[in-house]
Amino acid sequence: MELIDYLKRHFFSREQLLACAGIKGEHLDSLVREGAMPRASYRLRLALGCDSFFGAHAEEHAIDYYARGYAAWIGALGETALEPYALFARRYRQALAALPLRSPDAKLNAGLEAHLREEWGHFLDGTYGLCTRSGLPEDIAAKELAICVIREETASKAPDLARLKEAVDLLDRASSPFAPHERARSSRRRYVDAVRARHGFEVNNICT
Image (cartoon, rainbow, N blue to C red; front, side, top):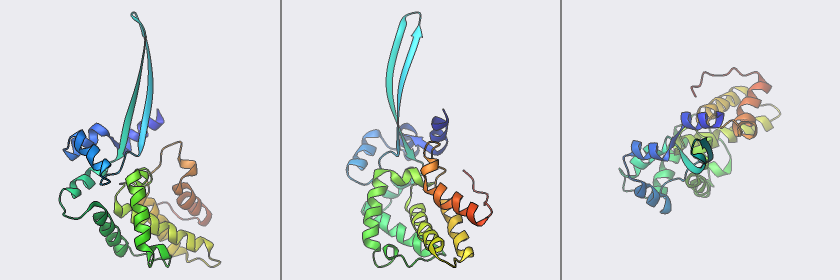
């Protein structure tokens, strides 16, 4: 039940997403088919068995769960003349420019366009709905930049601990808590929990 509780707390079911975005299921399906909207990040498959006076009964159900930020993404699509990828790329670039950290990593500089195309694919797959808090370009940009900086500093023989802590805190804010069965293998465990433990960084009060 811990997984179900996690999904209910941090995600929208398909029905909740439709209600929040104010659209019909057919519209959502068309957005996904057209490559404008991410797929569900989780699909919960349920096999139910029931015994009663009338005998045994079995049912199977599937429930899709979407990042809560996707309702805002659907709204943004309806408010702009930009193509979906162009909207994603613009918001990603703006988020990177607004962040105080910088990284020399080529994928965030000269190679940014190719990186954005790759990120767009992960976005549409629903991957970032799973591993960031909102699933939106702003959190995705923050997550990628933070990981680049953390890798740079932890590989250095003389790390800048203030810069490292800033990157860890940024990743903490951008990353999802992760589902119970995923936490041990998550980027949060590797780049937030482990780095804080190694360097004795204090844990900021991040609401989950």
